[in-house]
Image 1: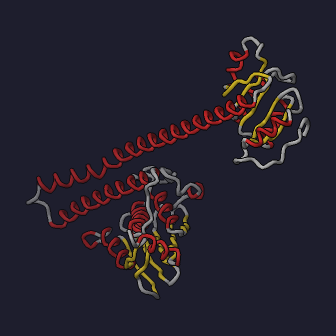
Image 2 (image 1 turned 45 degrees about the horizontal axis):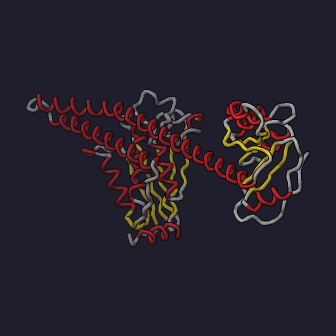
Image 3 (image 1 turned 30 degrees about the horizontal axis):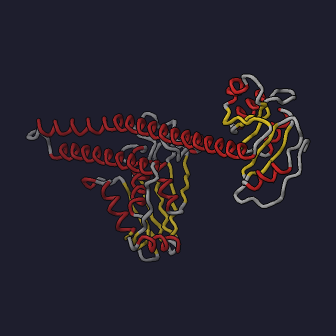
Length: 389
């Protein structure tokens, strides 16, 4: 490394912070190296030109850079500092002669975090570097917080937009059906009444599913989603969910199971419900009316496997790549109401169970989702961890 100096090998009192020095002289006093090392700073390199400093920074990114404003190279000190800042965002502290006029005003173009006058005073050097690093860290924390807040604002705005849009259709369905039932109650046949009630029931289910999805996404984004496995009778639980999709004895879901073990398993009931209801409702929504969604559970000592198969529009290969991305909707499903949240939620619920989800689909020939939930010692540990809550 051109212009490199010997670094003290004495063990520092704290974790090393990497320091790049850019100055005309290829060396710095051994006493200063030793003092920096003791204070927890590691001189990652000494450069004598802009080109060399950029090379050092790219090979071994520093935490802070000291730049001599009187640098005699392809670029002067301020220009070099500007390049370093724009390329790496590393905080800059300038070194300058006290006699230089207007040095600080010119240095401001490179977002400096400090100014030191030569000859260097060890106390001033350490305090300036420390303050510069602290200032830079605070700026990064603020930027991170602002980005998170902006992301939350955008998420909330998008969710509000989706909810207001997606609620309109089921609300109109409920309003229209109830008005007809009230206005023509004595003229409507029993079969027609059942049809209207079924429409109301389906609309309420759709709104309830939408609210669940929105709350789930909100909890995920805020880090408040929890994993609380408890013993449940999985087959009985699944049958109850299927029954919710089949009002007035109209079969839309065919439920089958195959088990060689006790159906009492340890899972998070709330998360399993999200998995099953989202996959079944998607199967119904994207299939022609009157077709059946097949829901099969295989239960063995190691795993619970859910297989949900529909005979609907299918998913294109291009859309399958973004299948579990929030708000993403299939290119062939734009005319069908939906939020693009369901499969993203399913994936998160599966991940929390340390499970897996696979898809087999072809446009025009339906989709088959297979979810595997492990029923192992890890799940038992999760139950034990929460058993005293």
